[in-house]
Image (cartoon, rainbow over all chains, first blue to last red; front, side, top):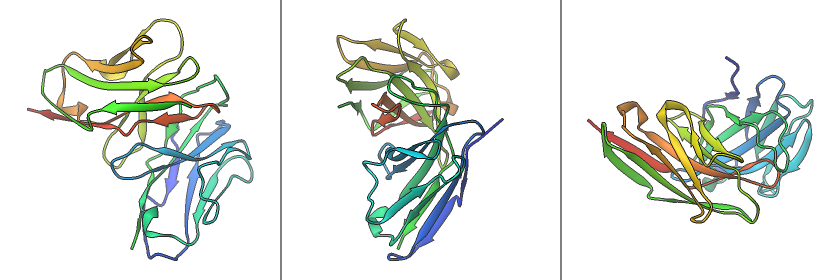
Length: 117
Length: 112
């Protein structure tokens, strides 16, 4: 069964360091999402890609976060520098094409748990 | 703007008892509504979704939810809880770009 892959599963870093997370969506899925899930809360969308284009990054803290999906397949989310408040689970999800009124099922990866010391 | 409120951050039931997890939504357009389940240290899995049509939606693992427009609710139920149902459950509403807006989640505990 096809799955969304994420690595690493766990990351511990010190504040002010740079971190990067990788996501490989299900083959054929045009839409890729990065969510941040703070402990005890629901996932919040950071960035949404349609193929290699950014559809929505309004909630991405652009002073320190960046995301790319250069070939429209896998994606990398980077934080530089990391802050204590960035400790969270970072979830990647993918779906067939999504648009207004079109809600194809999102398939989630296992996430990367980031701890910033 | 769309939003979701889940009443009760933690619900505890006995095995075999009814499960009821509450979700209320706010949406300026006809909503698309979803329930997801998350087991510890795992990603989210879709339980069921409402788009249009029948207001009673059946999902996996014996769960179902009813869309009530007049009450702006989409509560999740299961007639008989099983130990394996212990997890965190998230209600979500469809956003403007085909994305999802999640509630804060309800952690379900099942007592033997």
